[in-house]
Length: 64
Image (tube, rainbow, N blue to C red):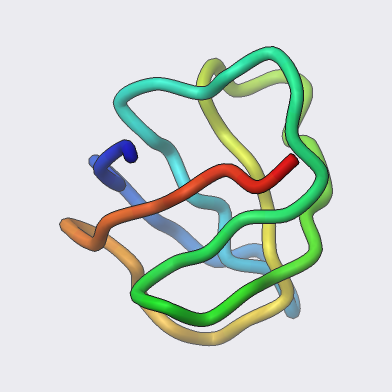
């Protein structure tokens, strides 16, 4: 499990920056809720999920 160290919003997406991101995953769980992801290619350790929630300091789990 990793920790969300920052979060900001772009349109309908929350861009979530974690302290570590594994090489393989298909979805994420943040505070028990599962989200489909869009990779934020230009931002290290970041994924984007469709949400208006601020996930900063939440736990994030990468699901295979």
